[in-house]
Length: 638
Image (cartoon, rainbow, N blue to C red; front, top):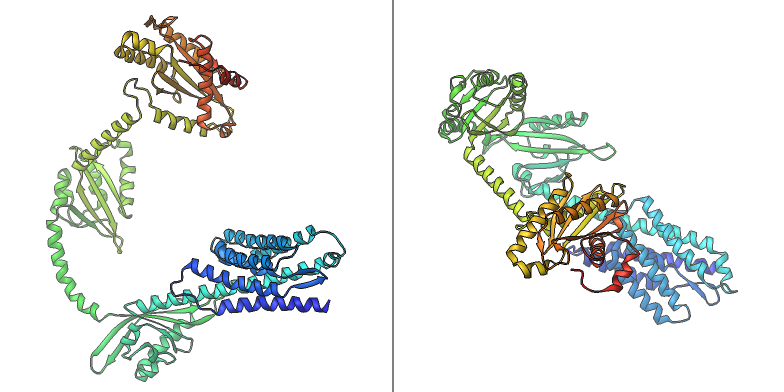
């Protein structure tokens, strides 16, 4: 038994060696996931070969090893590419070894790799939790246990079966520890990528950004910080403090601000002044915030510096730009009005007043917005609002002035106006109004055209019933709606008897007139809101009857048949003497999910065939036992 455990430890050492080798191999610069998975498959496939080269002999002729661990991890981490590479390597080696257990060995290899691939599919690219790793380890143990139990019972396997508990426990612990080590490495790699990303973000910022430890030493800086502090590179700052670069009195002030932030939990923005002998005074707006880890432990300080020197220079230019802006606002095509925090007008251009001629005298600086709205209601400038709802309308309009958004509304003279509200930081707002009367008219014309085109696309031009495409859509919708209900869904498939003979006798123009009259009769039966009448094709028409059981559908079919016969359209080519129809009825209920729409229509068609075969001018419902009779009868149903 001691020799056995020596082999077990050897297998474990090989697995550990494989994981260590994989973790120490650098990732490719391209970082292509597929290539990395193939590479992982080769590593764990090679580890599997080493494990298989040191099998554990429980009894003479009985060899087992820990190959399932490396194979399953190859699938769990590398997905199907990694599992495929490792499994092919291990399977080829096992077949090369030969022996009576070769097929069983290959089966174990495939099973272990498959469990790993299933785990990878479950994780879907995320890192596994400890609970999931325990479950994964248990599944590997279950696979090993199944293999042990299905092995033939003989004197050579008795010892292995007796030690199954210890063996399965060893597999479980080893699998869990190995997979935990692999995912620890994956977490380390993700963390390293995140750090690199953070470093890249900090380095790419145009403004100074740096991180210090609690003692004030620089641990991470970007090029902008090095430029601000006038050093050659970022490395010249790492490990040093402000006292290494600034006069003591300035450095002491900076450190006092840092200690104040570190003592509390809130970020702090301060103005800092730096005086360089050769370039004068520089004013910085500095944001300082404590940096803490997930447990809340203080680990450093992050600082962001913004140079305000240019801002001061821009302040003087701002006044000049405001003058230009006022001139531009006065000459813009749209109307513009600005309100202060009390919703009183502070600016209004002439274009805005021209849009509202009835209340132009009210739209001046100093006038409250509420009074302007009340005057617009009293003078009839805004229409469509009942007097009892006027106050509610004005209250809603006032609340919208404090929220960003766009509103379109008509005026009494027929024009449409679109107002776009943008709240300001001081509590007021800016409203830009545009005359959209032409756009509204074009929009309505386009909507009418689209509705007409949509109606034409779904309607048969001859009968004005739904066309085949609209019928298929409506049937699919109704079949989905009736799933799981007892309401029932029925369809009637209607065929004009001897219609070819009618066309041959009276001509196609008369045939079209005949179909129109039949369509009118079909439409007259489809009176309920959910009923749909359609031209199914040629002389065939169809009715979709939601919430209709078979008995009611048959009754409606007979009613329709009699209505068409009552039209008394002459038809010398028919044995009936007048135009008649044959109707097939099919009904489904809560089991609609099990019946495809094509099969549902086929049922109605089969019932229609029976109606034709019975002498025409008849109604038949679908019967399952009648299908065999129909298939053997043959012949034309028209």
